[in-house]
Figure (cartoon, rainbow, N blue to C red):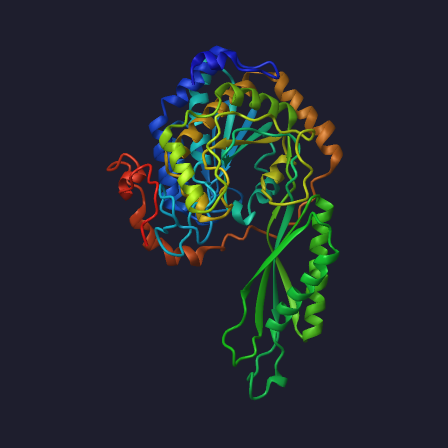
Length: 517
């Protein structure tokens, strides 16, 4: 991005000077190689929720080398941390998720499905890119602040186990954001933008129900047993009948996590794990209460007992208008990355081979998303950034590091995430974030306006009302990583030996065809 483009960018509020922003942009551009290495390295670690140990050590090592004070194990979560720097001025929190998804191992840079380790976790959403963006932007902004003696404090934090929606509410409960003025979150996308107001995403509570019965010989004397699995199956059947009479905005889904041991033993223990999603705090709580009632009814019907355990929670999302307007002005000033013919060819190959709608990488930033121009939401996904959004004024910046029209939570969403497409999207996002950091640090009115909107507008629509267990479910995915990590380690990126991860894997970019069968 040319300096002139920064200076000519639209500004919704009083903002940092063009000179300061140009310095921040130059600071990000100076980290181009570092961004590529960070994106590729985190991709190679491929750690699911609560198991992000290599990722945490790697990122905190970079932050410590750049003058940030790191505190590990925050909120009682072993892989969580904060990295702080600065003094005086406002406190700005910067975050992005780092976990990946089970079963989405994928070799990057290939337009067809090829796991690196069959059945292993992988970055099937692109969470390997967000913290590299935050780190690059924070380092660039810090350099500008030091050079120009600008007061202010940064607090970098990772989204741990976001795919389980399992930590940010605990961050809030433990007071991680009690001294924070504003927060900017970042999430991978194929577009470049931000939004304010009620964002149309569902809140959610994650609950595991465990039924207990009595064992018996399933053929010899089944009448002496009470099947816990029967309790699970009746709960699931009853819930599916109840769906007909639930609002169209709800989303609910489940997996049986324990169905018993072997068929000739009546199971005395069985478990089912539910996600209950709805549009408001009250609606989420009502859905959760309905699930509890059905579980108790299923237990009574089968002569079993049932207990429940909350494994995660996410509040509905609500973006801050003044902060979104400031960030959007910087996004417009940065503009979309300059995609090459190779980038567009790889995009088309991925879409064509995997039977997705063909759409090129965009060369234009869309409009600022607002309640006035967004389609009416009828429910959908969740993100536990909502818990922070209801604690301090917060926005999410979407940055263009992936291919359009991919399937979410799928290997397709991993194909571009260690390629030049991801590297360029992260660099663009880091520039916009670094510029917005400087806006916050040099414009007291922006901070005041954001807080006023939070108090006078957002908190008039609803009040934060989470459903939490005693502690985060940090044991989740431990067994999975014990099984797969030894196989995955041989694929960790060695940046000292190879220019890029694709070079290490022997992949030519762009690869445009699948092997002939």
